[in-house]
Amino acid sequence: MSIESANRFLEAVAYDETLRDRFEGVTNPDDFLKITEQLGYSFTTDELMAIVKEQSQGVIVRRSTGIWKWLRNVSWV
Image 1 (tube, rainbow, N blue to C red):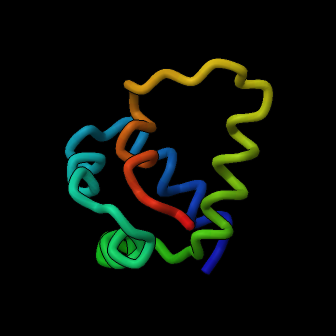
Image 2: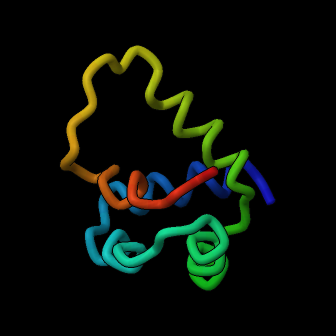
């Protein structure tokens, strides 16, 4: 498990709508991680959240659309 793997995943999913579509029905972290593992990535939800937080620094207004929409559908708590 690694932050590097989470970085690679987020970079890939940012450019690949088909990849994002794989997560459309996901509503919990366990299912989310199962799919990422099937795709060859290995990271924890804490590692993923650390990267998302880092990449979101300075963001004041969030849109409900865009590439992160699928990520917001998961109940992370």
